[in-house]
Image 1 (spheres, rainbow, N blue to C red):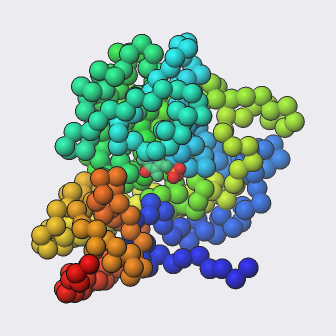
Image 2: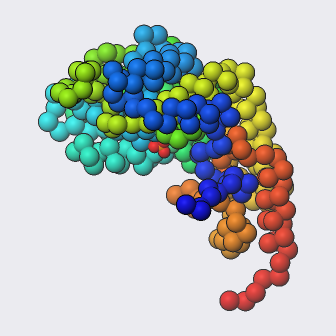
Length: 357
Ligand SMILES: *Cc1c(COP(=O)(O)O)cnc(C)c1O
C-alpha cells in the first residue's frame, strides 16, 4: 500500500485530531486485542476498567458503569436502547434538541423509537417550553447536549433533567465532544451536579485518544443490565456493547491519553483552543463577518459561498453548519499560525477582483 493519511495542516472542521504520542503508542501496542472477549484479552479488559474510572473522575460519577464504545454514535444509540428496554410503553419516544447529533436519527431508526426534536432558541440552546410540550407518558429519554456539534453550546441540563423526572423518563447528556473541555468551565454538566442517568463522552475527540474511543457512562447497573445479552460461546457470560469484536487500540489509547493529560494537559489545551477560537472570532468580526461568539472552542461564521468554495479549493478542510455557516473547531492540532494562514488566504480571496459569471 502506498497511500498516506492526510496531514492536519489544513484540517479546520474535524472533531478528530492528532492523538497524543502516548496514545498513539498504546494504540499500536494493543492493536491485536479484543475487549469484547475479556476472558481471553484480560490485560485490555483491565485497561477498560481503568478507562471507565478515569472517565468517571472527569464526569463526577461515583460507582461508574460503562464501557469504551466505538464512538459517540454508539454511545448515543445505547442510551436510547437502554431507555427503550427499561420502559413499559409499546410506543416509546425520545425528545432530542434539534441541535442534537444525527446519531439520534440512527438510534431512532434502528430501535424503532419515535424521535421528537425540540427547537433551539436564538441562543442555540434547546427551548425548554418546547421540550415540556413534546414530552409525555411515552417519553423514555430526554437528551441534553453538553457542547453541540455545530455551535458548541450547552443545553440547560438541570431544567431538562427536571422535565425528564416529571414524565418519568431517563435523562441523557451528550458530551461526546464537550466532555474534555467542560471540566475547565463553569457549566454544570457532571453527574455530581445534575441528576443524569447516562452520558456520552468521547476520548477520541478533545480527549486526544486515537479512533475508535468513545465512552458510554451510567451510574446505574440496571441501565447497563438493560443492554446486556447472553454470550453463549464466550467465557464471559454477557455483553452490553453494541459491537462484538472491538478495538483494544481505542481502549488502550484512551487510558494513555488520560494518564498523560488529565487534568493539567487538558486544561492547557482548553485554554489554548479557547484563545484561538476567540482570536478567530475577532478576526472575522473585524473584517465585517458575523461570527457566533464561541462559548466553547468552536466557531460558526456567516461566510459567502464563493469565499467558502475558494478556501476549499486552496485545500482547507472546512465544513458548514446546517444553516450554512462556516464551522471551525479549534481542536488540539489547530494552531494560531494555521489560523493566521487561513485568514491570509481569505484576505487574498476577498481582494481578488470579482469575475462576472
Ligand atoms: C461527534 C459527536 C457525536 C458522534 O460521535 P462519533 O464518535 O462521531 O460517533 C455525538 N454527539 C456529539 C455532540 C458529537 O459532537
